[in-house]
Amino acid sequence: MDFSLLRELNSIIETDRADTTYKYALLRAISEICQENRKCECSGGRYVLPFGAVIAKWLLYYYPIFDSQRFIPQKHNEKPVGKPGKKIAFREQFQQITDYYGDGNGGISEFYVNYLKGTIPTNLNSKLIVLLGQLRDAIRYPMKHLGSKSYGKYNAIFFDHKNGKRNTLQNVNPELVHTRFGDFSISKDHYNLFKLVGGFISGEASVLNKWAEFTVNANPKRCITYETITKILYEHPETERNTTDSKSFYNTLQESEPITCIWSGKKIAPNELNIDHMLPFAHTKNNHLWNLLPSSKTMNSKKSDKIPSPSLLRK
Image 1 (cartoon, rainbow, N blue to C red):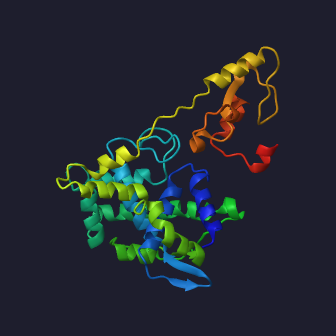
Image 2: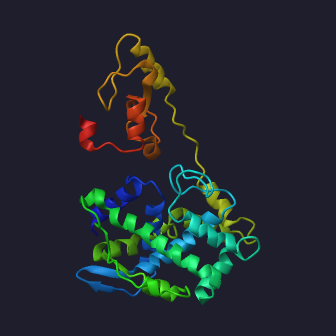
Image 3: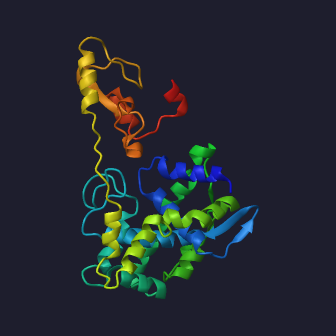
């Protein structure tokens, strides 16, 4: 196995910045599609897959999120429909679908049955077609950008062939979705990688998932639910971003000599002093003093959860 592909995939999951959940939804969809052994053509060392297969996955991923009674943001600082502020691109259109099937009209199960049979109500069909187009446009963004950090170019892993005949789409059903939105391709090496480790990415083959399944089945009375044991298995001690000691130290030091920002090299005014996790807390949960450095409020905000490059760390 080419372990460089595994390292690259790990880098994409762990460190590539994401303003929305698109990256995670795409990786989950690709993992599941490759696991399902779909028939696909291989040309020039690349597997060609229907774009609609990813769209269909996203329909099911995002439906329960947008159907939730509690607002669940899928974009940094996202606001609910009807309130000013940022919105995920297809939330408003999607919510028209979830609203229709809400209030005792069957929810996601009824929607999915209608979708499979091609019996989406006429007044809703056109709205669903618009939603499918919005999902396609949203998917194209992570398809273009995933792997660009590792390879230094766009479309490093996926290539969108931008074909398709969605204008002829009428009654929405799985076959039409899979055939009318064109194709995308993935290198043979990446396809085999997702086929091999995709179960771990989507969670179906993960150790914790198997542990939870075993625990549920080990109890004859089935009094422990999968959701309950999963929540227990994921519990861990809360680790806060504790910078108190470090800030106290730099405040004391600042009384006798100027403090400079670790990132800009400029002097920090007393009221501008922030303590920055050099290696982001979101990735390392590290509150050791060597990882807590003085930064101006402005630079700390700009850096956010970015991981500094090796050359910058050496400097």
